[in-house]
Length: 169
Image 1 (cartoon, rainbow, N blue to C red):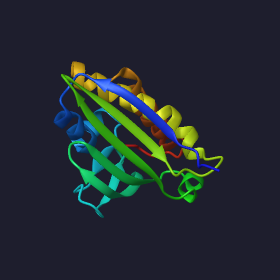
Image 2: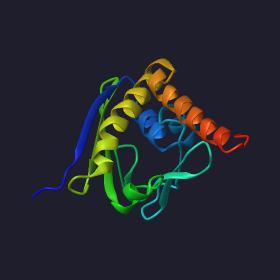
Image 3: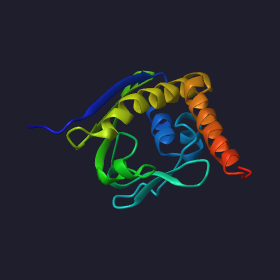
């Protein structure tokens, strides 16, 4: 039986180099990926880390393949939740194909466990992040949904800190 997977395809009015840069640059990911900054050298075998605004690692992995600007394959593990972390590593493949003045971006997140909680999370997360990436590259602004998620996360952190009698920076 095949393991569950998630596939998302979008078309972005941009250059292939710009889309690849947006996937691999901390300055870009922070704007469209719910405030998370990606860190990696993007060489095969290099670690990949997504850091939240609090500096904590939210997701991690390792570069399996890098063929800039056409293909990038990484392992992926959710770090911010114990149950999701225990699901272990899955795999994310980014395929970029130039089509005139546009780029076809295909994201394949596979090698997930049966009954995966990660699948449930990414099924909502990837479409929001990639729609926001598309908006950022085409208009210069990320979607409000990705910014709202960061604001809501921050409000939740502030509420917890307030309940504990702490000032949250």
